[in-house]
Amino acid sequence: MESKDIFVSTGAFSGRATTAVQSLLGAGVHNVELSGGKPDAGLRGDVLGLSSQVRMQLHNYFPPPEQPFVFNLASRNVEVRSRTLECMLDALDLSVELSATRYSVHAGFLADPPVSSLGRTWNLSDLAPFGEAQRIFLDSIGILAEAARERGVKILVENNVLTEKTRQACGDEVLLMASHDQIEEMMALVPEDVGLLLDVAHLNVSAQTLGFDREKALRSLSTYARGYHLGNNDGVSDSNLAVTEHSWFWPGLSDRATFATLEVAPAPDVDFHEQVVLVQKLWADVARS
Image (cartoon, rainbow, N blue to C red; front, side, top):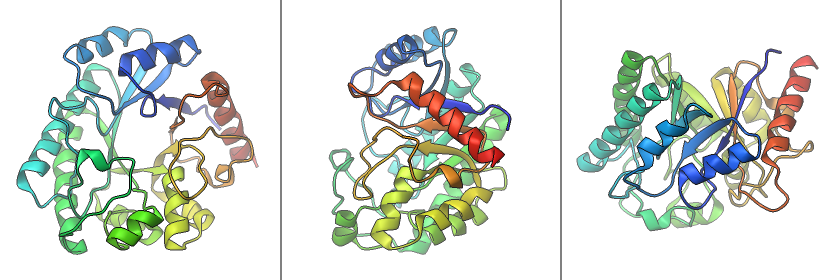
């Protein structure tokens, strides 16, 4: 198997994204995925300033907008959808400046959650009909994919995570692309050059919540997967734990995907360079088996 690109996400780091990048550089990591964070007037310039030392790509909520809101490509609220697309077009432009070849986004939601709900249980009312949200999302992805083609960047869509608490509060259908069937259906409908960013940690939680087979889903969805988000959790919440040689997903990783990003929270016992080396080794071992 040819060598895969292994990135580490800044999403689980606190503080400035560039501080996280510098910390990862110090740990021997040279591929970084910028994700999340807070708005910062000097952030863009600082990111570009680091681009000679580290290879970077962007994920969804980066650069963070001046007025924080939850990106939603499926929103019935015209302002939210327009702002989401505007921010993502800006991310595409920054991707070009960074010579990044891909930009990944989240699948949409059937309602617009407040920023305060991120990382917590959602309790939303006035959900859009599933079909309407799907239609709006597909229209949005079409716009984004066309803009990405013009810039020479590939778009990937990430599957959502549905926890049991959010399911109890909102029902089974509050997020697009949470179940195995929903992910397959959506990937058959998006433009041909849009790939799947398959988040195995999200898949693990959603499988437990909705009762589908995570291993079967991972193997089946390999047809669409062009990249992975990797991390461990207990199947109840997406807790960004480090991967190990015993992580459940190794046998299901596809050689079709060209990269993986570690979405792992920093901790005293987490060595990010060792995490990268572990992913490279075990993914290659799966390909040879």
